[in-house]
Length: 239
Image (cartoon, rainbow, N blue to C red; front, side, top):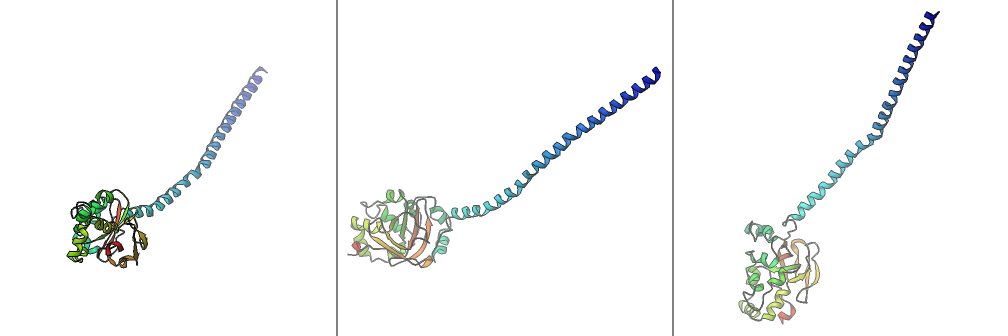
């Protein structure tokens, strides 16, 4: 009888161990389900990669535009711009070189603007020196080339040069406050002289009063320059 009871007790013990083992196994499956659920909740994070790709693609046009804006030759307009670039392909007087200096300094390095440079720097008349003024603000400068000055009869040019007030009036008539690009310069603009200059047309056909465009949109550190084929005369100077 005792033997049977021992056998029964042993069988019950084995059954309890087995039951506990099954319970333990069942408990270990629940964390696995939680892990699977956590992984499922984290899956949407993978969708961030396409957004990053779209962002990088959208930035590419901006980079190209920035490159165009940083190129000083990008805004040039005029039938003679190519000839200018060939005459001065590099150095301080080139398109790229002028962009590094303020306008009076930049003009002094341009071999096409030697007479204008002499006029604004006091070389032609020591009482007329506009270098600091031109280098100290933001301007649009209408710049007659050496060929333009050569068209003025020597007697008339000397008369202007010897009269400091008249020379200042003529020179400041070629300067407009603020920088204007080729696509916005057409119109009537008050000059530093106080008189109004009329600019008409577009592109290489731009006219500055009666002067034609040689090459415009030339950038300097503080100004936009339009080289022209004639010297502009305000009405006061013409009288």
